[in-house]
Amino acid sequence: MPDLGHWPARVVWLVLPFTAGPALAAALDPRSAPIRLTASTLLWVGWAVTLGATLVPRSVSLTVVRTLAPAALVAAIWATLARDHVSTAGVVAIATTALALGAIFLPTTGEAFVDGSSYGPERRMTLRTPSGLLLGPVPLTWTVVVGGIVAGPLLLAGRQWAAGAVAVVVGVPAAALGVRSLHQLARRWVVFVPAGLVLHDPLALPEPHLFLRSSIRWLGPAAAGTDAIDLTGGAAGLALELELFEPLDLLRRTGRGATATEPATHLLFTPVRPAALLDEARSRRITVR
Image (cartoon, rainbow, N blue to C red; front, side, top):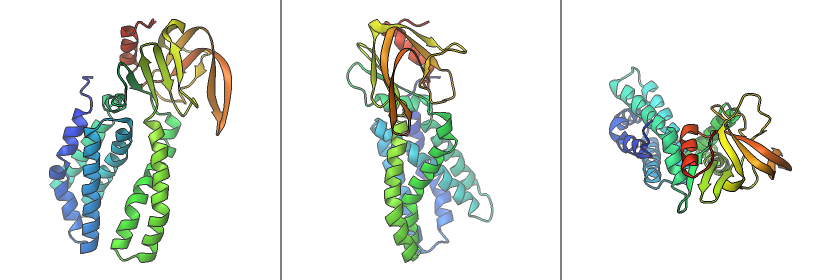
């Protein structure tokens, strides 16, 4: 896959007002003026915030775009289904918002955002999200975040004063907590530094762990049945195994709020782009098997 960084996401998102805007405007046209104004404001603010995030690639920006981009697709689907017939504008809106979502979730896009937070000679490479989180907690948290942001203003615009007030009071703090949880997924990476590599994974490790180049025997695809300490969290994809010359005391999470220290000579982790990570390891004079 060509490494185009965040440019595909940036370009596709930039043209969304022209490709998805007509369908959204048509769907909002029959609504009352306050609802049209509120919904249009939310849409424009969401588009502008996401575009701004693509212009400043950081791990925080990655959380922003991966939270708001799915909302654009949901809005396009609603705009298409809200009408009596499926229009060409609706099909274009769904297709382009889906394309934007795909571009934002490309492995190279996420890596470009995460690496934007690097310092000097560092290189940050993302880790895969555990499958168990993708199958429930992540979509649920995303729903709470987006619902908490849009429900209150739309209910108030529809003169549902009591429900709108409750939605604002409850929804905004819930959305803030949800964003904080989602941001943890954007802070999971392997960092190549001049001295070696660092595993930075708040889900598995309470604190980042540095593995000096001189302590690494080899790095490569994990063998079936390995007894290495599993830090993948059950993520799908090719797991890599890191073998050390001597045991290292590893502080890891063992449950909700619980940690334990254990000697480790073999570790497993699952990068989003394992081949690219191994190439980077070779360039950093780490033995690849």
